[in-house]
Length: 315
Image: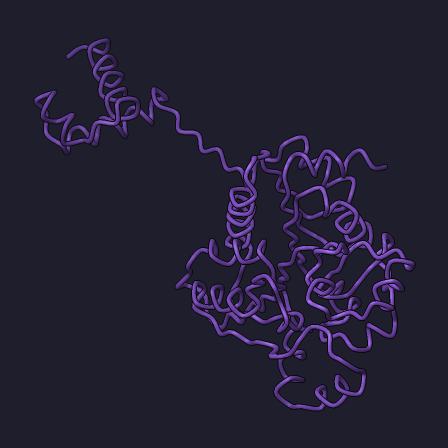
């Protein structure tokens, strides 16, 4: 076999394997050559540059939108996904992208702090199983809701994550907002509660979304806020929440009295978490997301092209 014939053989076998998806055994049968020889020929084709393998990693390959977001808001990373029509499909895609990124950065002994809601539930189901990591702890960053007309998956999220990561799950078995300051102060003396909140303050990677302050807001619709409190929050310019802290467009706490009834890591403690990953898209979340970004509450953003464009149009 001369050099021309050898090269042609390498090209033909490579096309069968990489373009036509034939198995090495199928190629062996067709070419009348041993499977071992086919494997050697495929390796030779790669070594001679006849075959070039390129891997497009959507996590590492930064698009123009992602680079612009990262630079404008001082992020460690931005992941921007295409727009999809269906909200469930959007949540699944955002959740999967965030889960892939978490898989890249998570290390042994990490403490993963999480919020709650549909967005994070989609993320928690997509978290990639890891058997190589030891001492992973998943902890709630804030209390949940007990009066609700929609599922917020408060305990499902950390449980899903802990199960997939082979770690332990630490829950805050309290509402995010208590009836009175007195009730909160009393419960904060409970050793079990203080231990979980202490662990939450040691979080190394936080995964959250941002809430919106509209009538559909879970706190509003479930009756956690009194009518006078809702009006007071509106007058204070409430746009949404971060870990149950109601904020205005400058990411300032809207109501100090309400804050005293809130069960959550403080906003200051949250900002000090080394890596804060936020998953958010949808027009209603624009104001609260922009506030969180401007205040340094987000290090890694997972969003879609529409939201990215709106954020970049704001200077």
